[in-house]
Structures are given as C-alpha cells and as structure tokens.
Length: 227
Length: 227
DNA sequence: TAATAACTCAAACGTTCGTATGAATCATAC
DNA sequence: GTATGATTCATACGAACGTTTGAGTTATTA
Image 1 (cartoon, protein in one colour):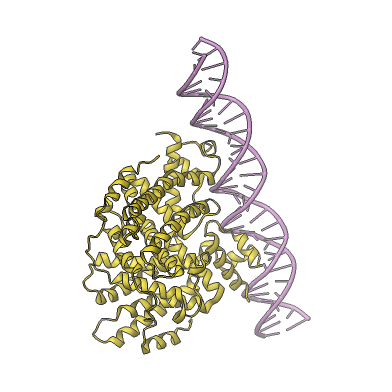
Image 2 (cartoon, chains in turn purple, orange, brown, yellow):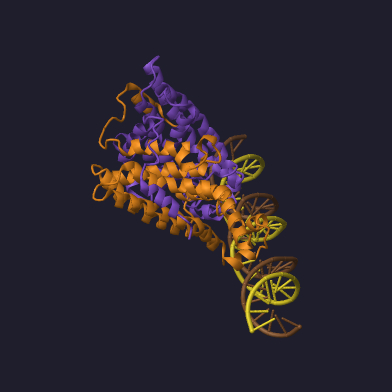
C-alpha cells in the first residue's frame, strides 16, 4: 500500500478517535510508518489532509444516496415516493459503505458523526455544505411524501433523523448494541433507526400533549433550584 | 462578577464553539479579561477547568431529571408511568435550563452536544459516566412503559432520543429552526422532539419493511462503484 | 495599624506543534 | 549506465501551548 493511502488510513482513524485538533501529524505519521514530512509533501497541510480524508469516501457515499433517490422517483412517476424508500435511500448507503469498507469505513463514519456535532473550521465546513445539498434534495422528497408538515417542522424532523444516524456512527464502537453488524438488509441497528424514523416522521404535527398535566411537573420544576 | 465565574463563562463559551483541544488558555483568559495564570490558580489545570464547567450546571440538571421522574412514578403508584411523562422528565429539564440560564446555558448545551459525539478524554468521560447513571434509571422506566421491546432495542431507541436532543443542542445556534425559543411548555423545538420521540418509541419492533422491495434498490446498489 | 491571607500579575519555563529545507534514496526512461 | 523526476529522510525553525514562579497587589482579620 502506498504511503499516501497509509497516511489517509491513519489520519482517518486518529481524527475519528481523538479529534482533529488533538491529533498531531507525528501521531499520524507514526501510525502510518511514514516520515513526518510526508504529510506536507503529499497533501500540503494538516487541513488539506482532513479534506482528502473526507473526499475519498464522501463523494461516492452522497452520490449513491442521490442516485437511489432518483431511481425511486422515476419509478414512482408522478406520485410521491413512499416514506420508507426515501429513508432507505438516505440511511442505507452509509451502512452499506461501513460494511463494505470494513474497519476504515467505521473510522470514517465515526469521524463524520463527530463533525455533525463539532464542526471543524474551516475544513469541516466544506463537508457540512456538501451534505447540506444532499439534505435539501431529500427535504423536497420528504415534503412530497408528508405534505401536511410545515417546512420548519419537516426540517426539524430531518435533523432528528440525521442525529440518530450520526450518533449511531459516532458511538457504534462504544456501545455494542449500536454497532452495525452486517449488510444493510439485515442490520438490526439500521432497522431500528428506520422504524424509529418512519414512525417519528409520520407523527401528527400539532398535538399539544406536553407538558403532561400532572401535579408532579409543577412540584419538580419549582423545587429545581440549584444547590 | 468574580474572576472564577468569568473564567467559567469564557471557558464554557469557547469550549462549546471551538472544542476543548482547539481552545487555548490564552483565548479563555483574554475573553474573561483575566490573567493567564488565574486558570491554574483557581482550577489547577485546563482539564480541571473543563470538569468545573460541567459540574456547575450538570449536577442540578440531572437532579431535576431524576426528581421529576421520581415524582411521576410515585404519582403512578404501581402502574407504569406514561411514556409522554418519561420523555418530558428526560427532555424538558435541559430546555428549561437553557431558557433559564440564558446565553451561558446555550453555550453549555452546545458543549454537551459536542461531548456526546466527541468525548474528550479523560475529563469528558466522567461526564458520560455520570449521564449513563441517569440513562439507566430512565431505561427501567421506559421498560415498564414499553414492556414489549427487547432490552437491546430499547437501548437503541433511547440513544435515538438522546441523539435528537444532543444534535439540537449542538446545532441550535446554527439553524434557526433548531434554536429553542422559550419556555419548555411552549418551545416548538422541544415539542418537535417530544412528538417525534413518542412516535418512534412506540413503533412496532419487528417490522421487516426494509429494504423496500423495488427494482431501484438493486439498480442503485449495484451501480454504486466508487469512481 | 500591622499581619496574614487571598488574589493578580508579568515573565519565563520546557514541550510540542505544523511547517520548511536540503540532502539522500528510489524508480523510470533514454 | 546515467540522467531525471519522484519520493523519503533527518533535522531544524519559529510559534503556540500548558504550566510554574516569585514578586506585587488587594482584601481580611486582629
């Protein structure tokens, strides 16, 4: 394997495990068994290395999402695409890639999960912007499938789905029950997110069931003085 | 305001915005208008400062959660607590605090959102462990309300709820539609998470609707070669 | 007012960081 | 075989980092 690839793999792993700022180029080159100067030779800078880590996997991933949605839409003709299919096109590709890419894919998804919660400036922002294009595309599909939802509420619910996905990616290695296990078609974690997201997206919008009418609410909130 | 409090506020803000490793003590002391050495005088180290930032707000927050759940449980007697009440006890306190604590609270919640996706070692791990106690306590309440769910699936769904909450906390300042607006009772973002989570938790467990049976799935997955 | 404690300050410590340099090594083509 | 371009290497640079120090200042107590 070439030095360039070993550097990408090592950076992917260490950025995912320790974060961008907390990972030094010396850590990376040590893990990759490469010289310190090789990073600046092959990539130019630490930030450019991070962008290269993203580019390697993110482009095919997002293309797969959009192609699958396109296929579903042309299949549906003038009708809106079923909700389950939109969710599948959005969520299955990262799980499939994780399975296909092996260890490196799991590191990458953990890194992506980190970025969602803690953007790295400015390199991480290009990733966010790229993903935002995908999100907008899916939002219009969701809007057709769930026309009763307001735009704001739809955006919020999409973020809840994104959150579940990113959280699973970031924590899969820490909690065994969140660790993806196999192909998307049989992965219980993906199935769990899909079931959860499908029910959540379909929930009625204005149902003022909260706060629960109960004396305990008032009691707990009033006693909640900081000690 | 004392130097110690100004340091806590500044650290809270900068850790939340830029992350722990990417924030220097010089940044913090400059924002707090304090001397560089004051951090080590008042807290001992940078890591200890982070733990102090957590301690100030996390303890009352988690206590409020548990007290509210206790109140609901004693109110319900031998019956399981309603799902909506469990979710309220879990999710409303951070929103209430965010409203109550103002700008500092929003910084803090953003920081918490970051930690969920990118644990800071070792200081951040004490936070995770502390939260895990709360999560276990709520898991048993959820288990009584949703006895048909397996333990693993219940754990996964709890993580989906946690994800939505953390993601909202971390991104509230970037996406206006995710920005909490007011008291928990009237906050549309909290209502959105609650509705979404309630429907998601109640989704049937084994419903092999995925992958959607469609020719587009096979077409898209087979064409998804990396170019 | 004098003594003691609490706190602030400027300056410096040693370390580690990302980056740059120029020579050495390797591969390839004539 | 030798010249040329690509890559690797040890080394060094200046900057920024967390931490420490000891003198200076302020507040508290008797």
